[in-house]
Image 1 (cartoon, rainbow, N blue to C red):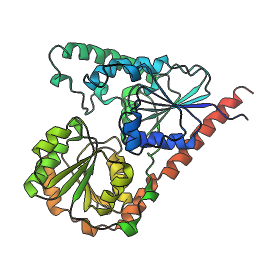
Image 2 (tube, rainbow, N blue to C red):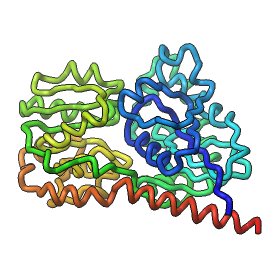
Image 3 (cartoon, rainbow, N blue to C red):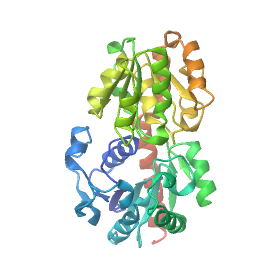
Image 4 (cartoon, one colour):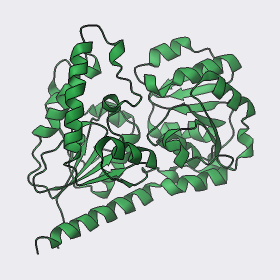
Amino acid sequence: MKQPKIAIVHDYLNQYGGAEKVLEAISESYPDAPIYTSIYDREKLRNLGFEEAGKKVITGFTQKLPFRNILPRYYLTPFYPFVFLSFDFSNYDIIISSSSFAAKYLRKKKAVHICYCHTPPRFLWGFDTDINIDSMRFFERPIARACQRFLRKLDFYMAQKVDLFLTNSENVKKRIEKVYSRDSKVVYPPIDTDRFDLKKAKIGDYFLIVSRLGEYKKIDIVINVFNKLKLPLKIIGEGSQFEKLKKNANKNIEFLGSIPSKEIDKYYLECKAFIMVTDEDFGIAPVEALAAGKSVLAYRGGGVLESVVSGETGEFFSQQTESSLLAALKKFDPLKYSPEKCKERAQKFSKRNFKEKLEKIVNDLWEKQAKTFL
């Protein structure tokens, strides 16, 4: 049986987070497959540790738009569907898309389309998001609402064209069923658990956050609580709320911005514990903390319910409020959790497991597809 010709598709390469780590793992499984994306900020991604060596990255017309780095980023939103619809995939047998928006909008022709859906688009389907129409300027709002209505219909229509949905958690599986009326298979995202050596771990004096700093991440709640408690907190990440959050933080809170992943390891290994207040689709960062032997204090919601075990590898608080987090922090003792148990829990979400499951799914689909032509 001939080997399938595979293409990989990803929404955008202008930031480095959990979705991009999934993309890296997919690309490691299929190193000869080109990556199609809307925009690629090459130097920025390289500096943050994105593994690009030897990969062919094909960008859409949005890469050369002269105003894309000047105007608000949501101005590009209506362009993205047309970028992916403009790509020619007629020579491919299998397409693997890594999508939280338009990377699943493909003219696939004969190809089998497997979509690893991080979430249905938050801004279209009522989930927490940074794109808040009510906060836009008055003349932008009617245009944005019209675009939202159009894009919601397009998103549902294109989701019906996908041959198989994979997703990162039972949490998002339920969203896909609710929004698209489609079933999906959970394949937990890849965590490079082997990169953390517990022999290098120690209990520092600071708590840690690793996150994009968007509005829906609700990092302001943590800032306000740590301002009151005067406890050391380090925050790694960037985003639209960076300057606002930094301005509101006291001296006990340090903002490190975006730093390469290899440098982040040190902060994981030396923190007291990891804090997460976001309702995440899955949440790769808290699992990385577990892999470094650190406990997690998290909001009881979203994908983290599938990774953190209360009483064994961390604890939960019930509301995304200052009072709820404050009460949980006062009772939280990071020393009671075994680093070895935290590490063991993280192994369930290893990169090796992800790649093995993905490759089996692709191989099984290809064998099934090939038999139809015999």
